Amino acid sequence: MSLKDVRLIELPKIEDPRGSLTFIEQANHIPFEIERVYYIYGIPAGASRGAHAHKKQHEFLIPIAGSFDVLVKDGNLESSYHLDRSSCGLYLPEMVWRDLCNFSMGSICLVLSSGVFDEDDYIREYSEFQKEVEMLS
Ligand code: TYD
Image 1 (cartoon, rainbow, N blue to C red):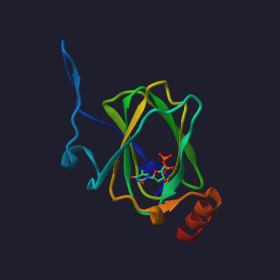
Image 2 (image 1 turned 120 degrees about the horizontal axis):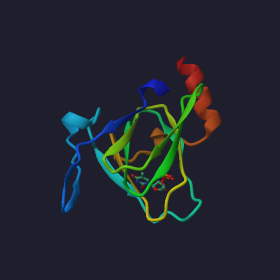
Image 3 (image 1 turned 180 degrees about the vertical axis):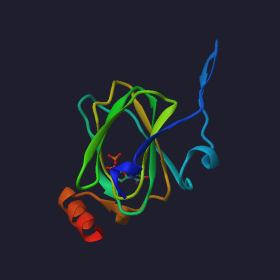
Image 4 (image 1 turned 90 degrees about the vertical axis):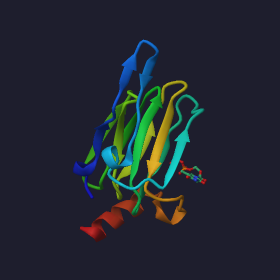
């Protein structure tokens, strides 16, 4: 996988005088089967999350409240995304390093994942990630 597979996905947004509504349909919006949903919230000022890659799992990150930055790396290139709309999420395929930072106060990151939690699917050392990328290329 490379950074070209990382992409923003627009979700439907239905607005009326009572507010906005966004929905997610796996078949129409998500490029993998969802097996887990988790969310990150109560994030103190200055905190960073992520700092890992997944060997096999895919994820889709949605800023359902507030905003944050996602820095992605594939071992060769890097890119960053500012997520600040609840109707637009970021798709991360396997083997993409991600760092999440610059969370606004009260922000919430909703994550859809292709697998149940499995610590063995994580690469938490960037040097190990680089080695894995070299082995795969
Ligand atoms: P961590 O991977 O450090 O979170 P993030 O990538 O958002 O910075 O996870 C924090 C802890 O929570 C770690 O002990 C693993 C655990 N955890 C679960 O038990 N289940 C889950 O679905 C997730 C995402 C994490």
